[in-house]
Image (cartoon, rainbow, N blue to C red):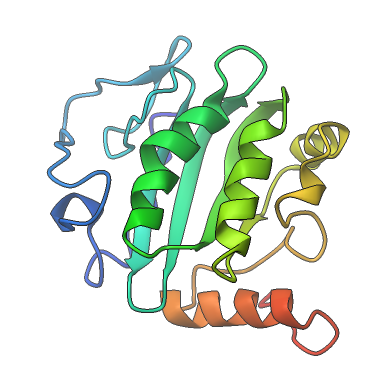
Length: 195
């Protein structure tokens, strides 16, 4: 687990710890010391803590002019015990929405498990972004994570599952990835996502 790094190919375009508008502004990551872990497994020191003991993130891109953010997650998303979505909503999304970010691409390929709870925070977050023509889209989730999210009825609040399962996002520039996903959400019959 310690070898899984946040995506770093966009660091020439955006670094969350250097962004004064980011919730992680001035966040200090160690370059060499492993300070965070998920259960008994150390994780790469570049992941950012936001309140959950089992889920970490990295805002790998934010564009305040267009109003979108791309966030990568690592770990176990546990709403049942830790209410992780509350931390995501209150400590990250609320602060980003104050800065005009209402469209979220959340990369979930490193979310190892999901344990659902109430959907109140998802509903609240979805309503707030919809009021600004925004959305929340989770891409590249594992099948068992999707199944649990469906059982928790998250499909009524956020976009996930087909066609967002196998998005080949890494070769794209962040604006183009956003554009493709936004176009698909606005008109799913007309646009094709990058695979």
